[in-house]
Length: 180
Image (tube, rainbow, N blue to C red; front, side, top):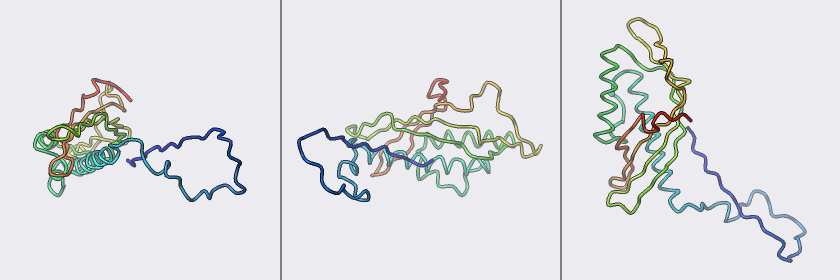
């Protein structure tokens, strides 16, 4: 999922100045258009980048029902990694793998850089429309339960350890059944 930052500039009123003969070149941005009003924008971007990397590695593992060959440990701590490994064990027992992609629309909803261990809370609108659970033995797709929404809110927590953000918790029911 690409990350897009919306930048806005300030409009000027009539300050009595006469218009110049030629407008400024469109290719030269003004300083107001190149800086963010959010002093934590860089940290939020770093949190989302780490979370997205973890979800990519998670999908690699789910496609083979095994974490071998993934870099999950680079992005997820013991608790979050344990949740993923539990999913993988259940998939191995059931003889299933995942095909397709999960869609993500993630935002940082909380950031505490003053804490002893800086912490971020994320809200992720997960989209299941391109995701399938596949039964390897029966060679067929297992349909989603009828009550499963195709889009729902999941939450996650990340902490900054040794200068990098690590996902510490994943809560698939974090949105308490909220759809997005």
